[in-house]
Length: 211
Image 1 (cartoon, rainbow, N blue to C red):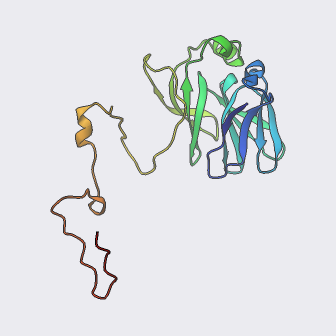
Image 2 (image 1 turned 180 degrees about the vertical axis):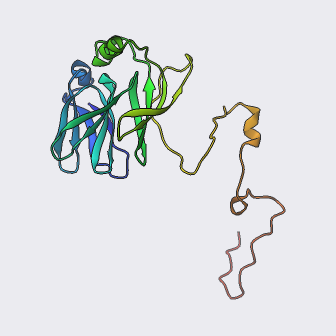
Image 3 (image 1 turned 135 degrees about the horizontal axis):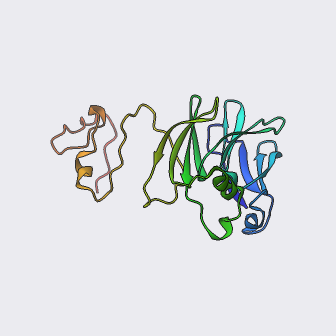
């Protein structure tokens, strides 16, 4: 059962479950996740719990060890796994900028999502899971920034970085502010009726067929 496939510029690692039947990953959710180098058709890591968002970045394979709440770095040659940091939530979505990793947290679901190592870690650390975004320094595992969403939000599924952007905002489609929030660079200005028309075809060019 395919959980996720890498979407970075080097889309070689992919994370899957060892099961080969529909929904089979649910019976192996605690340690049945694997990371595969799809180019070489080779398993480079196993024993993962519900892995998500595999990425290839700066020579290493990265994956969210979601069932354990860990950002994991993997040596693609030896398969050595390094838990970079623990995050208090179910991890999905991963992006990188320089030496920072950005990941999203979701509130753990009930049902078949219970009984994971994540639940044990939350209890051991005496922390409450939350939904939001964390920025992790991959050099030492420190969470250097975070965005914690209110109780109205329970799950996030992916994250993407928009370069050269500051103070980004999100406006609902029904919000009147949206009418004034769109700007155009001069070369990409919208079409207007008073814009000059295209120059007529040069003489000697094939004439159009009459309708």
